[in-house]
Length: 303
Image 1 (tube, rainbow, N blue to C red):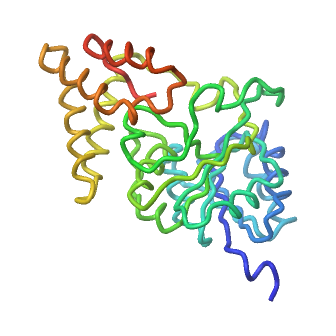
Image 2 (image 1 turned 90 degrees about the vertical axis):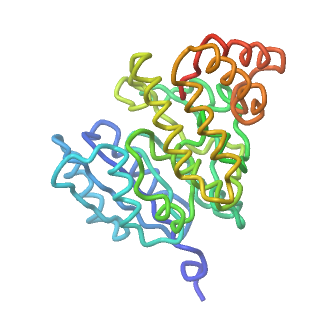
Image 3 (image 1 turned 120 degrees about the horizontal axis):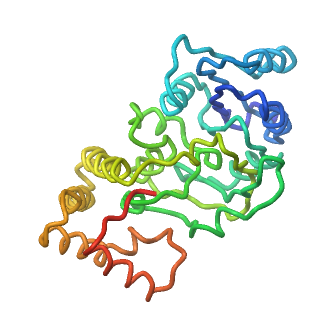
């Protein structure tokens, strides 16, 4: 039996939109993956440049590339959701159009995933010319996670860095537009087991002015977005996660206003659950104590 027949198919879902500038570098890195059984699903969200032409050129040369074009703009979250629904592999790996993957990324992560429903790796942040800046793990404390509360106010599981079982990616649908797909999937995956972290940066994560994650929103909008996420998280918790459901509900109520009662509740929750709510912060215990204390006077927006 061939290696192709004995290894699970991994669907690499790429969302594209006006990606001409960097797309070829990313496609080359996907084609060079050492994992022997992959399909590449490119879903284009109504690009107005040469993105489709580039994708078609590559698909003519590689029969494992499938291209889909939206008839109307879905936005990046729903575009990735559509890509996941089109995947035929047992596992899904999401892919941005402007990064570059190490050739061994898929092979190493698939060898390490074991029975975990999701695995993710570190990322090397680079500038637009792929010159190194720092690693994601320099900015946040990356680790394995086994509870949905870790994602209440933060996320370090990048979509470009993860592999997830397809059955879970499908069960998580519909993906809410109030948050990035990777945050929602990381949160949702903890209902099925623990997320494994692999401490190697297998992705060059390009930083430039057009990154979605670089876009800013004002404080009021960000706060309202955070409260909406608390509600979505609360309502998604299954019966077995009643404790977590209650915490999300309390967080939502504590963010309603700066009344003394809400201020105290918010501070109390951050102190009681700081091992979850501040898990990704690279701060010592004293600074985390001060951060929790400040929650009486401020509200931490979702990062």
